[in-house]
Length: 314
Image 1 (spheres, rainbow, N blue to C red):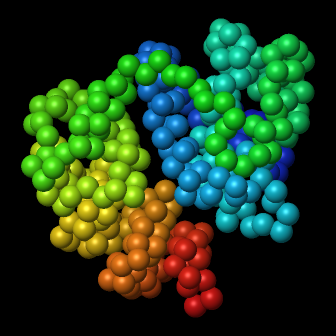
Image 2: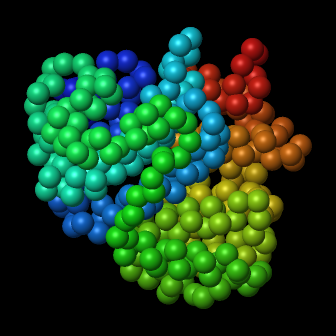
C-alpha cells in the first residue's frame, strides 16, 4: 500500500480495485521474487477459488461483483468484499499474460506508479495508459466486460500450478471418502500451511450442496490436526465442512471462533452459514452469539453482521 493506495490513490470507491487489486498483484510479485515463480502461480490458483466462491456468495448478477460497481446512493461499507482484491489481481494477471509476461508488463506497471505518484487515479486513466503502451493488445481487451459487468471474469487465467497439484489430488480422494476417511497423516507430510488451506478450499468447493459424513470430517480433523489447530484460515474452512456434516459440537465451534477474533473475512461467512442453514438451532445460536458480543466487534463489522442477521433496526 505504500505504492498502491498511499503514493497512487483511487479517485473514488468505484475504483477501489486500483488500490486493492494492484496491491495484491504487487504482493504476489514480491512473493515470486522471494520464493520463485511457483509460489505466485500457486497463489493465483488459490485466489481463483476465493474469487469464484465470493461471486457465488454475492450473486453473479450483483452490481457488487463488478470491478467498477455503481456506487450511487451506496454506503461503501456495504460493497466491501474480496472482489476488488481478487478480481483486480485476476485482471492484472490477465493483462500481463496478454502482453507477453512480466518482463514486458512490470516496466509498464512501474511507469504507471511513477507517473501518478501523489495523484488520484481512475480506471479510465489506467486503461488509457495501458492502451498507449500496448495499443494492439489493448484493443483486444474486452474492457467493458472486465470492468463494468458483474460476475466471474470473461476469460479464465491459466496457472502453472505445480504446488497445488497435491492439494487438489488429496481433495479429490476425500471427496469420495466414507466414514473411515482415506489415507493417513503422512499424506500431508512436508506440506506448507497454504497447501493445507488450499486442500480445504478445494474440498469445500467440491462438497457444496453435498455434505460429507460426520465420521469422515471427524477422521480428517484427527488425522491432520484440524480439530485442535489455532490457525484461523484452517479453522474457518474446516468448521464449514464440520457444520454441514452436522458434526457434534460444530455449532459451538463456529460460535466460539466468531467471538475469538473479529475480522469480517471470517465472522461474516460463519454467521451467515449458521443463520441461512435452515436449522433453527443454528439460526438462534448465531443471533444469541452476536447479540452477546455485538459491542466487542468493530462498528463496521457489527453493522454488517446485524444486516446479515436481519437485526439492522434493533
